[in-house]
Image (cartoon, rainbow, N blue to C red; front, side):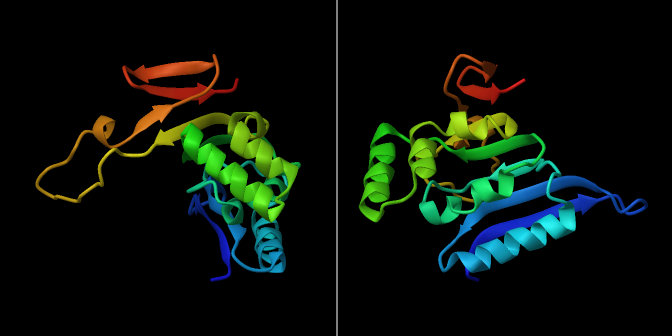
Length: 171
């Protein structure tokens, strides 16, 4: 596929109204017209102003971000977004790539402070810290979630979930 933009909704079978609208990434590896076509199709199916319940940004690469602002513009406040928590070294790496390729200022701002940008569009922002060791699937042993990921946040408006986890909330 040419786009890195996936969506689905879970609808009520009786009323056919969406209960959950989910988007995974919003970019492209190719020309932007493929992404624009996908976003227009999404808007036709769900409306231009319908809130996104859950957005997952899998990485900070520009090709996963490219259509995000277009998708979110004029949309009602969404519920929650999940994205990776970058180390300072990772932020520097993405910033250097952005300058090298002359990416737009919105993307540079997003790398520097994703909460400022996403806080305009979502009530909750969840940063997911990378696991320190690779996850292995073992059906006989289920690891506690606390060992696999840590939810963290920037800023003062965080709600503590447990000793090591935080959820940013915009109310």
